[in-house]
Image (tube, rainbow, N blue to C red; front, side, top):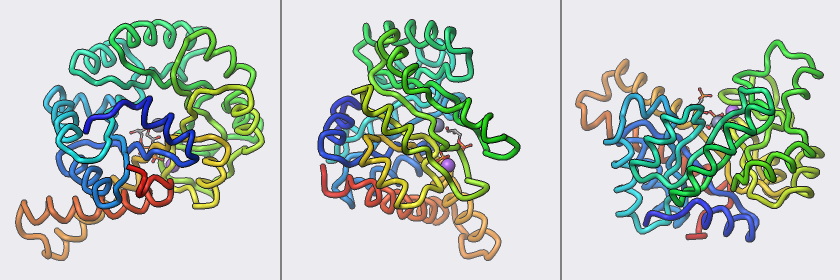
Length: 281
Ligand code: G3H
Ligand code: 13P
Ligand code: ZN
Ligand code: NA
């Protein structure tokens, strides 16, 4: 069934586990996430990056919403990393009730202005909003420790930001990065603990691909109740396709589709178990 992000996150937060939010791009991705949720009796989130919307538009949003509605599991559909009012309008107009208003690339005051405006608008439409302060990097390379820390979420600023913008969930930056970790990941748990102590909205950790079990568990203990996963699922898709085509084991379009779904579904199942949401539907 199509569920609200608020309900999924608040239930997870109360019961100390986390919801996996998986970036999807096509039918295979949607089937993989829903298939995994059903196999694991788990809630889950389908999320669309604006780059996926450029490619798939309304039909892709409709696919996600319909797949959620016809599933027996609680599934929410969310717009990830939207930096423009146009993307947010498109999502709200097409029936998505969960968005990330991402002003994290802006200077703090402009991030507040952007997020506040988008949140007010989304709330009028009955949607809920995730936002980010601090700036998650694409890679850790080339930054000094001081530069990395400057990009992390400041706990006191988080309090001020939530108060000023009225966002419903906060994405924190504590050393997490999108894509692969080029060296062993290092998360600033003391910072996370401080944030958790000061704010009560659900906390989100982006860049979950590449994080080991111990860090996932510690993050959940310290209040993270949504993890975003993109890279590992995409890699499973691409590797399966590449290997299958090179070895000629995939000869037909339908075989290729089925193989990519299976590969992505295995990754999603593994993540749902890791996040503790298996059996929680
Ligand atoms: O945040 C999600 C974007 O799609 C970036 O993902 O780090 O796998 O390129 P990526
Ligand atoms: P990864 O690509 O590291 O899984 O990050 C996903 C993400 O944060 C999507 O918003
Ligand atoms: Zn992200
Ligand atoms: Na990552």
